[in-house]
Length: 443
Image (cartoon, rainbow, N blue to C red; front, side):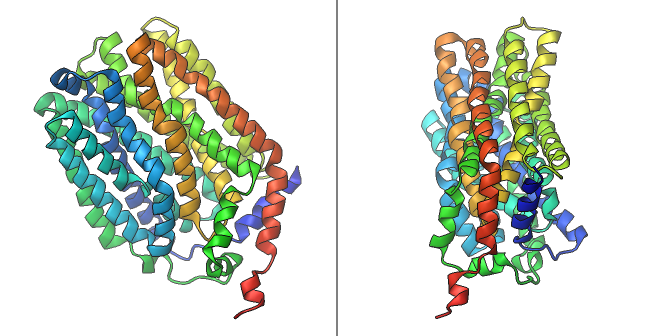
C-alpha cells in the first residue's frame, strides 16, 4: 500500500514548480473562480426562468431540457480541441476570449424572440464555456503546490455549483421582477466586466516568470503526438473520466430541475422556487469542496483512498436521493434531499486529482479538457435533457426518482479504477523518469 504514495509522489515531482508569490496565486484563484461563477450563472439562469418561458412560448419539458442540455453538449464536444489549443496558444488569452464569447451570447439570449433563437444563443454560450473549466483549473493548479490538487480541484469545480446558486437565485428574482430578458442581460454584463478585469490582472508572463528544468519541461519539447496517447493509456484514468462523468449526471439533473420541482410540487412562485433550489445547488458546491479536502487528507499516506472517497460519496448520494424522492413533500424529504445533494458532487475533487496524477504534466489543460468532455457528454448534458424527456412521460417526480440510479454505474467505474491504480501509477512514473528520445538524440 505504501507504493501508492511513492509512485504518486514521483509523478507529482515531474510537474512544474509554481514560482509565483502566494498572494498573487490567491488573486489568480479569486479571478478564475469569479469567471467560473459567471460561466455557470450564464448557464443556469435559464433554469430559474423555465416556468416563464414555458408559459410564454408553450414549451414542453423536453424542449426546456434541450435549452439547458445544449450548453453542456457543446461544452463536451468542443472542450478537448479548445483545451489542446489553449495549451499551445496561451491559457490566459483563451480564458479572456471564452468569457467574452459566453457573455455576449448570454446578452443575445436576452433578445431572443423564439425558441429557435434562444437555442442558437445557448449554443454559443456553450461554445464560449467549452474550455473554460479545463483551462481555468489548469491555470489555478499551476500556481499552487501539488499536494493541494484535490482540494483546489474540488473548490474550483464547486464554483459551478455556487454559480448555479447565484444564477438561479438572482435569475429567478430578476425574472419575476423585471422579466426573463433582464435575467439573461444581467448575467451577460457581469461576465463582460469580469473578463476585462481578468485580462488586466492575469498575464502569461506573471503566471510563469521562470521555470526550473524538470521532466515536464522535457515533455513540452516532445512532439504532441507522443503526449496525447498518454491521456487514455491506462484503465484507471479511463475509469476516472467515465466515473466522474456518470456521477455528475445526478447533480446536473438536480440543478436543472429542482426550480421546476419546487414550483410544481411545493407550489412556490418562480423567485422562491429559484431561491430554494439555490440552497441545494449550494450544498452540491459545498460537497465538492468537502470531497476534495477529505480526499487530500486521507490519501496523504495511502493514495488509493481517493478512489474510496469517490465510491463512498456516489453510494451515499444514491441511497439518500432515492429515499428523498420516494417521500412525500415536507421537511423529511428536504432533509434527505439536502444530504444527497451534498454527496452527489463530492466526487469531483478526487476525480480531478486522479486525472492530474495519471496524465502528463506538460498538457494539463488538455487532460482536464478530456475530463470535462466526459463530465459533459456523460453527465451534465444528458442529465437535464434525459430527465426532461422522461418527465414528459412519467411526470417530473417520476423522472427524479430514476436519476440517482446512475450512481451505480459511477461506483462500478471507480471500483475498477481503484483496482488498477497501483499498476498504472508504476508505469506512469517509469515513463516520466525515462529520458525523451529527442533529448538523447538531438537532431
